Length: 191
Ligand SMILES: C[S@@+](CC[C@H](N)C(=O)[O-])C[C@H]1O[C@@H](n2cnc3c(N)ncnc32)[C@H](O)[C@@H]1O
Image 1 (cartoon, rainbow, N blue to C red):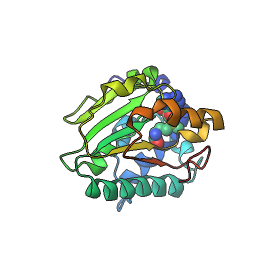
Image 2 (cartoon, rainbow, N blue to C red; image 1 turned 90 degrees about the vertical axis):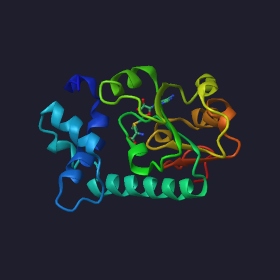
Image 3 (cartoon, rainbow, N blue to C red; image 1 turned 60 degrees about the vertical axis):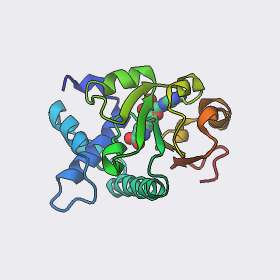
Image 4 (cartoon, helix red, strand yellow; image 1 turned 180 degrees about the horizontal axis):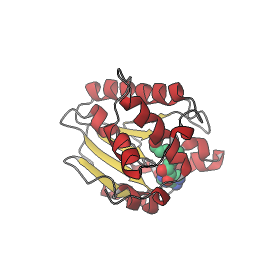
C-alpha cells in the first residue's frame, strides 16, 4: 500500500481510526479490515481521533447503513449500488451477495488516493464522479432491477441548493426505481 499520512485528510482519519480500533477489539461490533490496514500502514498514533467523534456513533452508523443495505439487497439481489462520496469506505465487502454490481464514486482527487489502497474487484469498480454533475452516470449499467445510492456523511456538507442539485442533476438518470440512503436530514431528502 503506497499511502502516506499526508494523503489522508484529518476528517477521514477520524472514521478510519474509529473503525480500525473497533475492529481490533476482542468482540468487535463491526469489522473493517481495510480501515485497520490503512491505519497500520500509516504507523502513526491516531488515538486522539478516536474520542473526537463518538466512537459508538460511528460504529452505530456503520451498522445501520450495512443492515439497511442488506435488507434492500435481499429485496433486489441484482441491484446496482453506488456509494457516492465513498472516500475509503468499503461497504461492498460488508454486504456483497455475489450478484450486486457496485460502484465506489468520489471526486477525482479522492479516487486517486483511494486507488493507493484498493484495487477494482469483481463487480466493484471505482469511478470519478461528482454528486452535483451526473455525467459519470452514463458509465453505469442500465439492466439492473433497482438502483441503490448510498451517501454516508456527504449531504451534511452540502447546502440546501447543492442537495437539490444531487437529485436534479447528479443522480437524475439513475433515480427512477432507486432508493437513496443518507444519514443526513438536510435538503429535500425525507430520510
Ligand atoms: C466525510 S466524507 C464521507 C466518506 C464516506 N462516505 C464515509 O462515510 O466514510 C465525505 C466524502 O464526500 C465526498 N464529496 C464531497 N463533495 C462531493 C461531490 N460533489 N461529489 C462526490 N463526492 C463528494 C468527499 O470527497 C468525501 O470523500
